[in-house]
Every structure is written in structure tokens, then in C-alpha cells.
Image 1 (cartoon, rainbow, N blue to C red):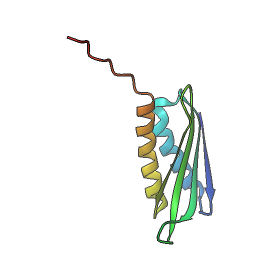
Image 2: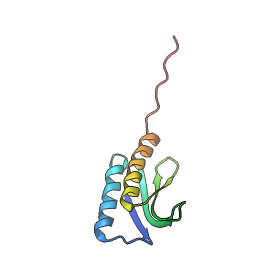
Image 3: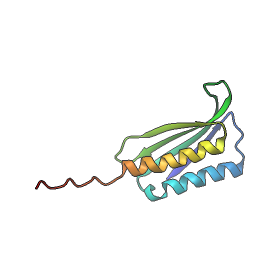
Image 4: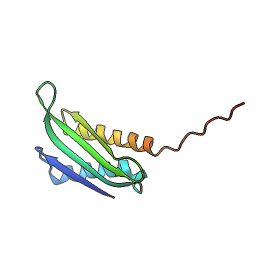
Length: 106
């Protein structure tokens, strides 16, 4: 499974790129055979107050499931990445959860 990292308007040095890819790889590890492709995009944006913020956009293609796309915006890039990693884990667990068995009628 390939993870593509794109930086727009923000400085991404090699250490940062390696760290971000590593964190998302760890988050996806349990579902790596079900995730065919992932893109993480770090972008500079203005928030609702007009201040500069960092947005982490995540896009994933899954086997036999709908595509996942979401964005997290925070003042600092590291916080946006942390929130996005947590959300990736929650989304994958929810998408690939085993269906709950319904209780039998009494």
C-alpha cells in the first residue's frame, strides 16, 4: 500500500515527511490489506478568523468500500496530523467492523 504525501504552501522537510508517512502507516497497519492507496495533503489555509492555519486532508481508497475523504484544520501542522491519524483509525475500525449479531427473539 502506497502513502503519498503532498505539501502545498508549507515547508515539508525530509524528517517531517518521514514522520508523517510513518504515523499514517502505523495507523493503517492493521487494515493495510484493505487500503489500496492513501494520500495525505498538508495545506496552508486561513481559518474563519482570518489567521493562518494548517489543514491535513486525507484521502483513502478501500477495497470493496466507499472512498474515505476528510480534512482536519488546526493552528499547528503537528496537531492537524495527530487529529487526522486518530480519525483514520476510527474511520477504518468503523468501516471494517464486523456486523453485530442480532439477539434472537425470546
